[in-house]
Length: 125
Image (spheres, rainbow, N blue to C red):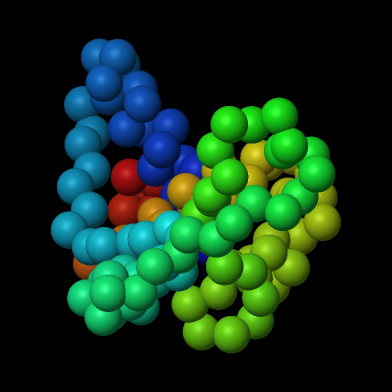
């Protein structure tokens, strides 16, 4: 699933630099944020007035002026980011957490858009 996204990102990046004439428009939504994973889940929590801010209690951040943070929820429940389910150990070592968040959001946007490539050319686009 994520290889298609990586290739698509490369094509879009090359297009912006004038190397490729292929353009990609994704008409779906994908969200990974402190309110949760999934556009519908996060939007529902936002509309319900829920917050994701918590007090920072980790000693690693004692020199940081702010004492409030918003974390992306992790775990196996709906709306939580499940790192082990979505990525191999090797992927987790090669990619930053923000890259993995982006890939999950992009995959959700493609699914939401209903994009189901059938040919190899469509998969590369």
